[in-house]
Image (cartoon, rainbow, N blue to C red; front, top):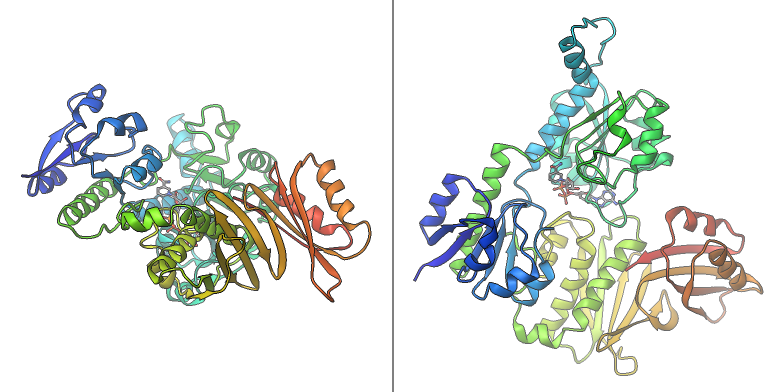
Length: 519
Ligand code: NAD
């Protein structure tokens, strides 16, 4: 019997032909009939239009694979699919070249005033003198995020004889060197670049990565390009900076709210905008489609997926055994990402002596998944996280120790100069230690870690500061070590502590260090 594939959004004929070689293919007859027609499908293929919601999945009793012929999976209820053991696959690399080419296109359009030139001539104005451009040759391009797209942009910029520098704390010097790119810190990149191009994923850490403060570091003659995601650049700040002509211009393919019809940025002359079309090419669409079709064939033949977004292929028994530990481990990964500023080169993971080898591997993978999901834009799952980490040059050490605290499943992790101990008892997750200081408090929400001098008044200074800034404290613990005149406070707050607030907190005398993590 052939597998049944339902095509819910339009895909290329070549892909349909390919699917027909191994499956029975049906195209959705009417988008209102999805609920009905998905009932006997083994596989459903979508682009971004069709929404695979919980309601739809309730009907899809036979469904084994949801294939997204593209990158983002926002239109799929991932949690529900995972809970039901349905594999979700996508094609994360399909549009990299298209987005890179669009970025270069925008860069040339900015350098040569192409949009203005086109518009003014069509309005019967011959503005030859006014429209003097600049060459790309010899200019510095600063790439923020040297991943799949950033690297393709770098290669192309080199062909224009540009000097390429990049800020990406998560890639190695060696990788950058091979691309002919020099790695620098963000400040240097902003100060030195003639064009700054953003290619990081949108995460808690990159949201508002570029605000007024960063834009003011740029040269008055430089340009900003964002073909990544809206929200990475603070649009209100960008508007002010462009209006005051503090930078020469910007090109935006993505916006905080799409479509951005209400955005005042659309009114500015020194902004070029496109409607999120970076990856919108014939080739990218076709290749996304082919990539998922090939993956569907592999999976239906019993082989592991190339690009799975979730992880229902782990043994059900292990998943059941670790059902409270895996979410804790993933959270540990997120926590590590939030409190470190550069890629961790080495991670040590310890669990209790009686934990099976197989379970230890899954726990480590879950930590790596939590960590890498915030660094790599898509496609990290509990199965491929280890390979991805090893590919990035990370050293992974795993072991067992006598750890159990009050009967809890306990995980001890070392990364950079830190040591974190957490534990869980069913769904209750606790933080038990950090950098040698002991605690026992919830591992949740907003975690503020402050190191203070061990002297009267310090705790009050911190709590008053938080109170004055409308940050409510949910839990607070203070811990001290013998013979050290420092204490550590862990404070769980109801509100997020912003980057600038954290900087202000660090300025208070007697505060040695402060870190914040939102889980
Ligand atoms: P990727 O995961 O391959 O690369 C992202 C890079 O950013 C990684 O090298 C990572 O190390 C780096 N990074 C992560 N956090 C960082 C931080 N805080 N500071 C500096 N660097 C950081 O992703 P990609 O496929 O190259 O996609 C890049 C962006 O392009 C994403 O935002 C994606 O959503 C977007 N995108 C846009 C379109 C479009 O149509 N405009 C299409 C596809 C992708």
